[in-house]
Length: 151
Image 1 (cartoon, rainbow, N blue to C red):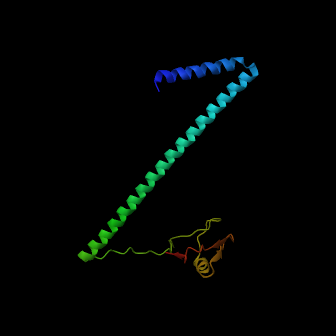
Image 2 (image 1 turned 135 degrees about the horizontal axis):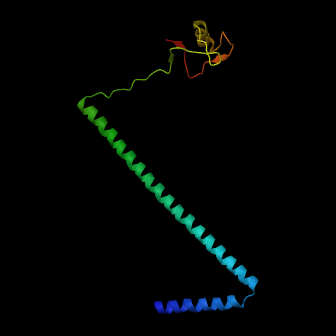
Image 3 (image 1 turned 180 degrees about the vertical axis):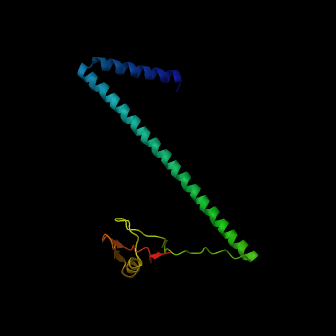
């Protein structure tokens, strides 16, 4: 098919559409224009979301491949590190665990501002709750903390 013939065919169909359009009443012409604008808007929206989906798909595929290669590389690193430690006789240092017990230097009541007494600290360690001796506010020991000490 020759490009000149192709453009001649498009020109012929365009002229046919214009002749048909001009023969329509004014209300039909308005509805046709509104329909064409609506179709164009829907087409642009559809193309936008299709392109957006393709870009997101490509992004997540590349991200997945990156994390896959990173994980494989890290696994080889750990494997060869283990072989090195085995051959050289070095022992890998084990990280020391620390206790969750917090040592509070001074503890004050949030209501009245008075310092907790030794009896209050003993009470909160024994029964997990205590009351301020000055204002009477109740304090509960959170389960995450094993003990409550004053240094």
